[in-house]
Amino acid sequence: MPEQRAERADAARNRHAVLRATEQLLAEGGGDHVSLDRVAALAGVGKGTVFRRFGNRAGLLQALLEERSRELRDAVRNGPPPLGPGAPAPERLLAFLDALGAIAEGNATLLSAHGQACAEDKYDDPSYQLWHHHLSTLFTDGRPALGAAPDADFLAHAVLAVFDGDLIRRMTPPDDPRRFTRATQQMAMALLHRA
Image 1 (spheres, one colour):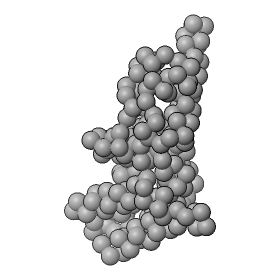
Image 2 (cartoon, rainbow, N blue to C red; image 1 turned 120 degrees about the vertical axis):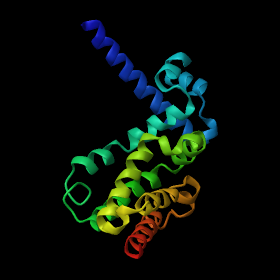
Image 3 (cartoon, rainbow, N blue to C red; image 1 turned 45 degrees about the vertical axis):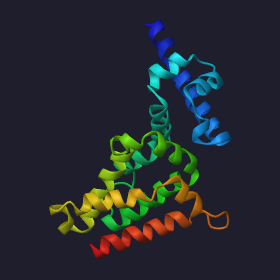
Image 4 (cartoon, rainbow, N blue to C red; image 1 turned 180 degrees about the horizontal axis):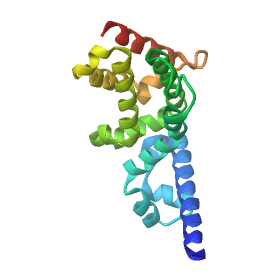
């Protein structure tokens, strides 16, 4: 048993080191600067460790995005309203987009790199699937007529399409750091009420 605990602690330490190294490389040079070799060297682990844990660059970026959105996922499922269950759909929609927008505004470089690395599998990404399902549910709850057609599904994809790293950077000037989020919330509310 003690050996298993040591392995788990070592694996957790390695995972943390690898994700911090990925963050540093993203900050230094953007997504093109992130490679398994560079991440492994900076994290002080072997390339095989990174490969076995994350598979490839896309898996590494997915894991970092999942880590960044873990608190949001937990709050949506179990947190207090309006982000968590119990509030009307329009209030939950605004709260969700506020929280997701904050993640996006603080991680535009990660979203750009993630979008490039995961382009073919974008819709299968666990974070994307969670966000899409939640938005689709909120659109359906806020406008029940949407539930019978693929409209709620489409509207959820449409809202998530604006979470593009380059667009986020363009819409997040230093003097108005929440501009992107406010614009996204306004768009989603207009879609909800016009659908």
